[in-house]
Image 1 (spheres, rainbow, N blue to C red):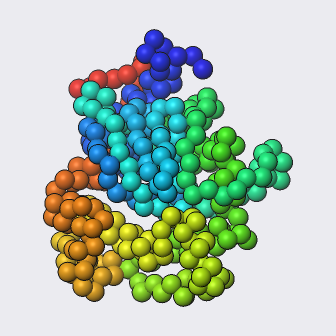
Image 2 (cartoon, helix red, strand yellow):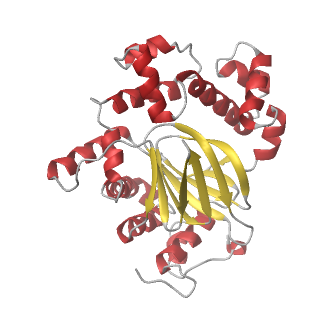
Amino acid sequence: METDTQGRSPQQDRMIALLKHLAPTEGYTRSLLDGVTFMRSNGPLACTAALYEPSIVIVAQGRKRGFHGGAMYVYDAQHYLVLSVPLPFNIETEASEAEPLLGLALRIDPTMTAELAIGVDEAGQQPESRAVTMYSTRMDAKLEDATLRMLEALGSPVEAKLLGPAIYREITYRVLMGEQGGGLRAALQQGGSFGRIAKVLRRIHTQYERSLDVAMLASEANLSVPAFHVHFKSVTATTPIQYIKAIRLHQARLMMVRQDMSAASACEQVGYESPSQFSREFKRLFGRTPTEEVRSLKAVLALAPPAVHPEGYLRRFSSVGTVSMDQA
């Protein structure tokens, strides 16, 4: 892969230029394609609790480190991150005003990904692998090219609609064919214990406000309660009760940040019956009261609507390298 004198490829320079316009403000920005979100951080972020849905996270500039289960996962311009299940973990960010962190996250579509995984396995192109919860792995030229084409397409409403879904599918395929893609393919298999726990995690992620009984979840996974605890911890590095608490608290934090919801309202929305218990467990997880946490992370966790530019605007800039922000 050809690189410039700063160690970045021309493709990376174009991705950075596009992302500066697609993600003009700090925090998260929706794209014109469902399932794709842009990320921007204008400064460093010390180790903090985060919640990612099953996704492929690609960083064009800056660096993030994720910490889970005693391991560290680096994702930057040379490495991307993959999560096969909804997962709370800790992250830290390297970024600055001069070189903000810029990237995008693609939600993993279970149906499409499973279909692609079956095709890859039937072709016998990769050896069997054990299922993994998350991994970071090296970016290759084909995935970089597909990512660039995705960013170019998402600058145009027409191209986002007509070309975006096919490129989304291609990126998913490239990840499945990557060095550690076998771990994601194995995680999608429904028969094994990992697949059964993953199904339960998806339910918790979408129904966190309901009463969730561990015995009921174990039954849904077709496991005894003791076996359920063992397999659950092997996937999430925590217990079912602690996982449910973390999901509820993370969702409450997002409600307060993105919907200007009060702590009392968020507490009720995520299924807590006791406001005092909610505040106590919130501070235990995040290290700050709800008010302090929202004030500190308001910009970092904000979610903005798509940044729409005139048709073809981003494509013209994509061919000339980086673009200064004052041209936005």
